Image 1: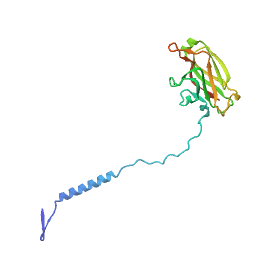
Image 2: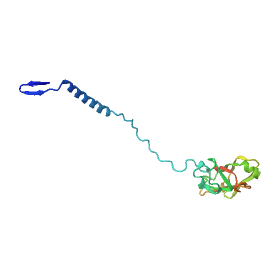
Image 3: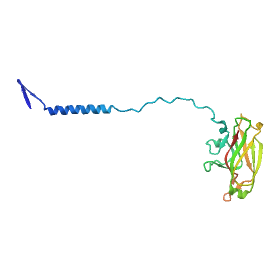
Image 4: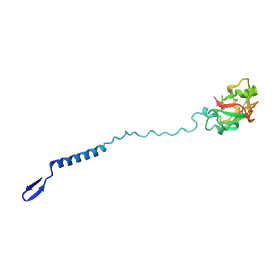
Length: 196
C-alpha cells in the first residue's frame, strides 16, 4: 500500500508487520528477563573453625590392643599371626608378646579376651596359661574347658612404668599341631591390654 504525500511516495508497512515486530521484541525481552530470574540457594557462613584435639582422646582405650585395630601390629613383639581372622582375632604361637604403654602405674589390671579352640583342645587337653608383665608372672591359670575366656588381674604398681612401653605376654604350655601341615597354634587372641 502506497500513500502519496505531496510529491514523495512513502511506503507504509501494514499495521500487521508492526504488531509482529513488537510481539517479537516483547518475547525476546521476556525470555531475557526470565533467564535472569535464577534463584540461588541460600548462603550460609562457614562453620566455626576449631583446633583438633591433641593427644589420645581416651588414654584407657590407648592401653587396650584390639587385634583388629589398624595399629595393632605395631605393638606385636612375637608369636602373633600377621593375618587377621574373622575380622576380629589372630592366632598366636607359644608366647604371644606385645609392647603397651601404661598411662599410670596405680590400680592397673592386665586384661585379655581369648578363645581356646575346641578342635585344638581335643588334641591338647587342659592347658595352662601364664600371664606376664615386664617379666613378672601375674598368674598361672589352668583351663579345663575350651571356649571364650576373659582374664583380668591387678598389676603391682612397681611392675609398670609410664615412660617406656611394658612388655606383656601370655604363654601356653601345649600347642595344637595341625595334622595336615604340622603348623603349631596356641590360642585365639581378640584383645589384650591394661584397664583401670
